[in-house]
Length: 376
Picture 1 (cartoon, rainbow, N blue to C red):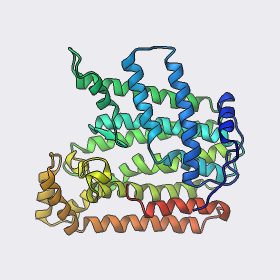
Picture 2: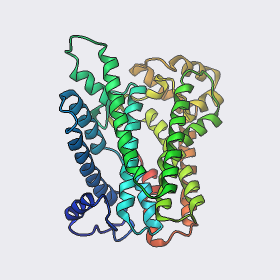
Picture 3: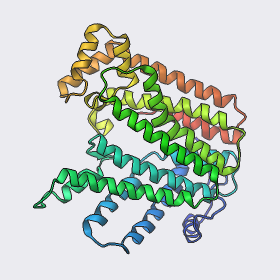
Picture 4: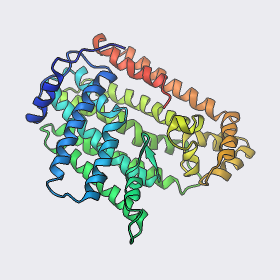
């Protein structure tokens, strides 16, 4: 992995960035790898969030409101791979955009929108932790547990939803200030697609039977388009380039599908300590995946009976052992591993044959390499 130099006096650059509304022409002399980008992006995001919370405190000083929002911001700034902003910024640099400050600004908007989506997703999934930190609704529940009145779980979820809405508004604040209508249009389309994908995901939880085609479409909407394709198209639009749109779309669909199947597989093969959550949570929640669908489509009658018995039910340690053996013996795990390898290889071949310059191609190949060795 290449070590791309960050321009000197980084703190001075950040101060200039925020005193001038992100208007800095260039952070990196070369297209950055993911770790180099993460370092600069995390500092940039943190500085922006500090400004927003300071502004909020001029509106209210009510402790529960400030504490809830500060907790949500600690989740935003404290974890995450920053894949979406990186894909936007990587594409922008590949297309030789001249104002990296603008690309970084839009990348922050992508991450703020993602934070909004995760807070709402945690409520839908009844999640307790994210990145080892209490989810927002669980944090609020702890704050008000001694309160004498009210439906505490309902109030906690309401406070979390409103906090997510605030982050959503912050993402829109950045986007609507952009002069790039094409990037704004892609961003708005991205919102429609990912919300539709999430609604599809939730609606499938009440269905006993689904199809592989429908699950692939869900993965495309929720992950491939949202996390990879649209961020890359936004980066390309910011740079004012359209020549490689089909390349970015094809590449994003390949690695996005691989990424989602990896998520589904990790839920099955990793321990609670490795995942930071309970394994087999998809099965427990009644969420259909391509891996569970493989069992329903190709498993023996007894395999299907066992999976149906656990689907949408609370699963104990013994149940997880039974399911682990089932997914292994049915060939579902091997199917997932083969499908992931196929998608990643196709993405790698696409990059190799592309006209992306060698000076940039290494950073793109590093994305493929990270997927190959992904464990969380």
